[in-house]
Image 1: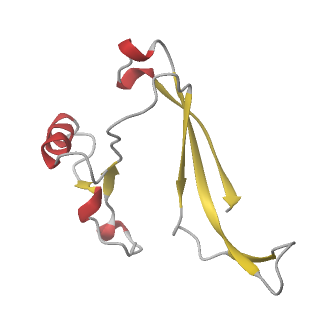
Image 2 (image 1 turned 135 degrees about the vertical axis):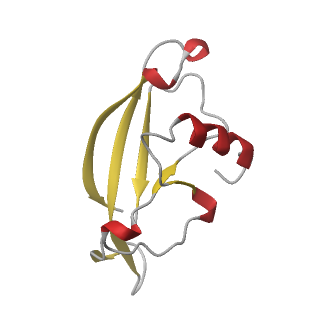
Length: 115
């Protein structure tokens, strides 16, 4: 994240260099995603803080699809909001928060939602 020092990312990058050679610092990644293997990138998402009592984390990623839906707002005159097709990734946080490590984060699933 923006509040996490770049040095933290650099340590993560060095630790995972063999598996993720294209790993980039998210704030410096171009906002436009281009197609093709030559344009592939990996990013690390880093939080400065997660509530200790949290048992799961959901990530919502937009911009992977151009699909949208217009929805009328019930109690507003002529108001419409636009929902975007969004990828939801769910992770379970296992164990006691004090003892958590990267091995305690388990991927539980993905689904597409409109939000």
